[in-house]
Length: 544
Image (cartoon, rainbow, N blue to C red):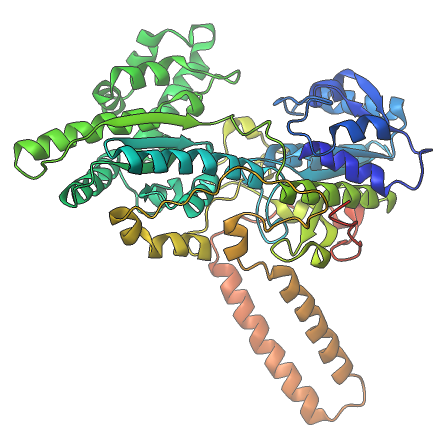
């Protein structure tokens, strides 16, 4: 849906006299000054098209002072009124610091973010979902649905499927709700219950045994890409390997040296893993020297240990079924898909919202749309300051950097699955039935119809309660009513009641606030970034 952000931007421009330029290759184009002029005709050709090949993208970040200065020089050279940064949590963090840097150095270019990320990790009270999440989940749900249906037809295979999501498990939960797979393991569950690898293997083996007793030697199991980073003992191993690689420099691929640098506990754990998992943990590294979790075949490792556990149980007479497993990774197949009607309309409205924020002269904002679970004519567009989304991670990574004061650098943090939310509760309620039955659902391919209103978005979005902003508005109204009722001249008894009631309320709020464990939000200077825009913009037609 990234191209529709541009379409919405052009739709909101007053006329063709406004020049729009795009930076080729994402941040590389921005820092390198590689800009091309975009016209309505260019954007019309790519509207409703998948991917982002009109301009391209990159995974590089704006980290150093040189990067910031290069971006500032480019914006000044292009005489930009506004800079739109399209992406997820990392891009939004970069945009927040870039907006501050521009203000501090007298650059008039407004910096505005647009939430686009297929993993759905940029999520919270102000951001209901990201562009691309619905599309990616629907494409992968069709593949999972096809596979589960095939399994129920052949009745002889277990399908272990790993889905994209290195930190949060949003995509795995969404696809599970759409397809009704037999077993779903979420990283957030593993962390919450401190589940070990042995615990997970036993849970999967229990499912296989239970289905075998029903005469069913087949099923579908879903796990998130980043599951290994949630398993306590594997997380420790990965941290040690990453530290060893960082200290080894050019010798980071010296597997013998990496093994030698491990603690005795981690060395023993590594040696107990299948040879292919050991090789992937030792050899597969990204440009930052860290293990690439997408290359670690977690589903294959689980299948290996589940098969061993089933053989043990069979020897004890506790299992008499058959276990044949097919493993697969659903990673980037959906990245270039044509956007779903929901994502197409959502991206279009975000582009228009971003244009309005720039026109208002504000900077340091993320464009938002509220009310996405309702019909498009009930959507409300606006913007939220990046600072309202930023916090310090409880365990900040070294590459996140620190502020000049020495404090850990605040960032827009990925939001994990809420284990107290209704989407997870819906999955939990159905687990017994899903494990025993064949209740598979296949959502089928994406459907496109000219002129049709966009359908509902993700299943998780429909189940969630996005009333945060409504409650903020209700609170503002209540405070205004109190102010009006307690104007000078009111009876002393009424004033006394109001004072005592508000005093009690503030005491309760202070106690609750102190008891919260959430990290404090960052404050970059409210006077620079201005007030909120939520609810002040009218959305363009979703069917345009």
